[in-house]
Image 1: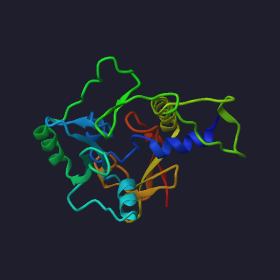
Image 2 (image 1 turned 135 degrees about the vertical axis):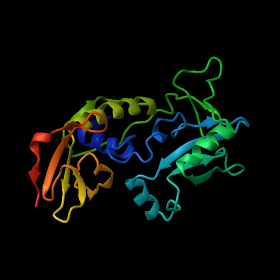
Image 3 (image 1 turned 180 degrees about the vertical axis):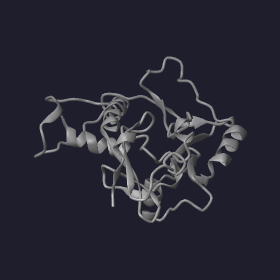
Image 4 (image 1 turned 60 degrees about the horizontal axis):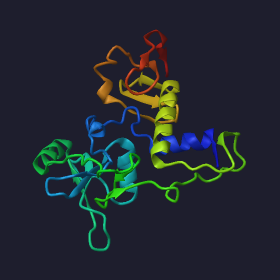
Length: 236
């Protein structure tokens, strides 16, 4: 199996758990039910599927399943045991979700006695365990740069890949750069290394010192940005 740096970077951006500036709302991705099946008092299955950040909104609209007005979170209700049982995707506001979690008594069920530590609760409500047959290889990437990981044959579990992604993503965040600037018309905007450029009204309080035509570079990612206040420059 070969994994090139280019492959790994693509995987990171596809599966990254949190992208800078898109935590809407912020608490959801810290909840124990974030994309991990949990149980209710009635032993039904639930998990938080997604939040209405800018990227998710675009993706939902493109497949014809937009977030209804007034909602910013979607969660899965029910077990996945087709054809008898099919789960339902439900859209709510995050304040409503807190109430639902409390009323239904969402909780993390401990592993069965003697279970393998690499196992997990699946959307079927059953305990699953990785095996040699369940492990999987990433596809080859011919004609690309030299491999980061190389071997004649290598198995990698989803749990291992998640850890690799988290470590590498943190490195990418430290290398990333964003630019906060104010247009001549007075609008505050934010741009990044990937070519994204969008309004940034939530930053008005922190960047009220920027005058029309001024900008400020921010290096790093997520919490712990290093703000280069001495590097403001004219953009237009």
